[in-house]
Amino acid sequence: VDTFMRRAVGKTLGAELSDLEWLQTSLPLRLGGLGMHSCADTAAVAGAAATLEGMKGLPLLTRSPEGGPHTITPTQDSVCAASLSCPRLALFPEVLTEVRDSLQAGAASVPRKQREWAVKISAARQESLLRNPLTGVRGQARVRSCAAKHASTWLYGAHNAPDDLWMSRAELTVAVRLRLGMPLAPRDRVCRLCGLATADRFGDHSLSCLNTGLRTRAHTALRDGVAALAREALLGPVLEDRPFTKHPNRNKRVDVLYEREGKRRLIDVAITFPLQPSSISKAAETEGGAATKYEAVKRAAYGPAIAAEAPEQQDLMLIPMVVDTFGAWGESALPELRALVSAVHRRHDWETYASVSHLAFHRLSFAVARAMARIALVNADVHQDAPEEEGQGDPLILDDSSSSSGSSSSSSSSSSSGGNRGGQGGGGSGNGEAGGGHDDPGQDPQNEGHGPPAPGPGPPFNERPQDEGIRSFSATGYKTGLSAV
Image 1 (cartoon, rainbow, N blue to C red):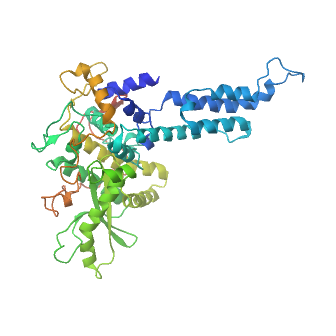
Image 2: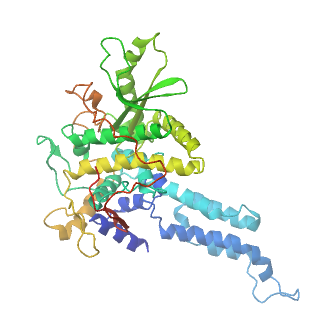
Image 3: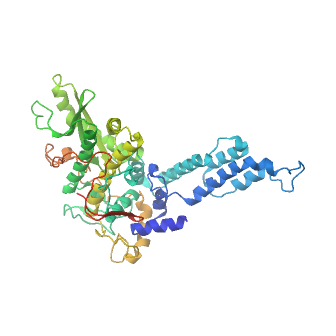
């Protein structure tokens, strides 16, 4: 079953998966994978859990109804030995020890152990991926970013999600390839965005190239998502406001401004690239490390202006909302976003907090994932109008020798799943911020990175807008009949 699943994912993405790519694919979403759990691992813990549950009836088998000896007398030791002989469990010594202890303790031990053991096996598999020499610091940074809180929300189906939360097949293919560290093109090429630098085949340069309006669109999408959440919380957010009154900061703008709990919150959003040289070490150490590090840049940019307003304006509070290209949020963003979600939930108390939170983070996570996929698509060899019927070809055509692209991609992807790729692409093109370009070199920090004002209030938080067009979902990904704005 695992082999068929691996082939199916590879066919959907247009290339065979390397061992490391399949290992990440089989991890849960919360650990940076795609949630396609290994059937072999599941069978191992399911068998042990079934044995533990079945030991409740062991006394009935060890005696005859009349009280005499039974012809078949399985003992506890023999039952434990049969369950512990599974070779798959031997790959996880810690879990194997717990299984042995639970079986020896009998049915009186803690029930429903299967989930607990499965969680520990998944954690062990993620640790083996991170420690693999082929993963390298790049792979560690990518996997940890993908495993950060709410980074994978775009892969979940949102309850009562609006119809605009859909990806085209090409966008989904590129987004998943970026998540797994797979190549997007057969070779490096001249960047189609700037026409000067070399666009590496893994999309590093594309995601950090400064010469594209798509970066501004990504920033605007994230800004509007935060503003919509604040608007739904009845906080009256103002976009592109100039809250500073003293020279020379009068023209300095913030992305979103609203008042909550007696403080005027100055929200400055940004999308940073965690694999650039200046951030990769932090991203490899902790989840959201690159986004948290970039928050210091935002504080340095606005800190003097806020300090200059004192004591006249002591109610100003800067909150950098930085997210990296894989969806990991900085440490300052999550508490404020959760406060907004709580305010929205108080308005929609007939919904559970979990459903409101999931939809809110799904919108923000989806906006980032789709924006990054659209930027990477510019230098990727992907059919924009991918075939939608089974058997009409793969969505990703790497080169003219596409018939052999599977094996070539597999061999190259064994190192691409996070391996050190030397000087390919990466953060050589500026600071890697994909939208909030206040600090990009050579650009006006007052005007760059700000899109047009957001449209008027959208549909209610829990209603689906009646858009035109037909959208459908298939096993190969999201498909849409219209190109979303």
